[in-house]
Amino acid sequence: MSDAHHASETGPQASAEAGAGEGRDFPVRPMRTRLYEQVAEQITTWIAQNGLGTGDRLPPERELASRLGVSRATLSQALVALEVIGVVAVRHGDGTVVTGPPKASRIVDAIRAHADRLPEIIETRDALETKIAALAAARRTDEDLARIHDALQVMEHDIDAGGRGVEGDERFHGAVTAAAHSLLLARLMDEIGDLIKESRIESLSQPGRPRDSLASHRAIADAIGAGDPAAAAAAMHSHVEMVSDVAVLRDGER
Image (cartoon, rainbow, N blue to C red):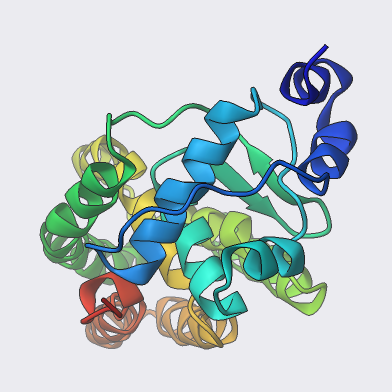
C-alpha cells in the first residue's frame, strides 16, 4: 500500500505524520508568480499527489516552511489564500485541515480571481454596512444591543485564546444588520455573504488585525448604543476601510 493511500485511509493525524516522511517532498516549479502563489500551488499539488481528503491535516507550519524553503510569513500568506478559496481551513489549536479540492485548474487563477473581485466587494460592503450601521443606531432595541455585545465577547475570547476572531466578527456584523430592521438590506447582505467571508478571513489573518478589528467594532457598538446614526455610519466606514487593507491587494514578492 502506498504512503499516499495509507494517509487517506488512516485520517488526519496519520496524514500529518505521513507528510513528515521521507520521499514525500513538495514539488518545486519555476517561479513566474508571487512567491506565496507559487507556495500555494505547491501545497495543493502535494495534497493531490498524496491523496489527502476533507478532514486530513497538513504537517505543522514550521515543517511546511522548512520543506518549502520559505519564511513562516510567506507560508502563512499562502495558507490564507488557500483558505479564502476553500481548499483548507486554518484552525486555532487544530492546525491546517483540508476542506475541499481547488475549484480551478490552476490555483493561482482562483487566488487572482479573488483578488480581482475584492475591490468591488469592499465598495459594496462599505455602501451597505455604512447605511446599516446608521439605521441600527436609530432603530436598535435592547435585545439588539445585547446580541451586538455578545458577539464582541465571543470575538474577544477567541482572540485572547490565540484565534483570529472570525466567528465573533461574523456574529457582530450579523447582529448590526439585524438591528437595522431592514429586510431588504439584510437580504442584500446575505447575497454577498460568501464574498464578505472571503474578505473577512483575508483581513483577520493580517498581523495585529484581529485586535484592531475588535477595537473598531467597539466604536461601532458604542455609537449604535448611543443612538447616533452619523457616528455609527462614520465608525463603520472607518472599520471597512481598515479591514480592507489586505496583503493580496498590495504588491507582492515576485
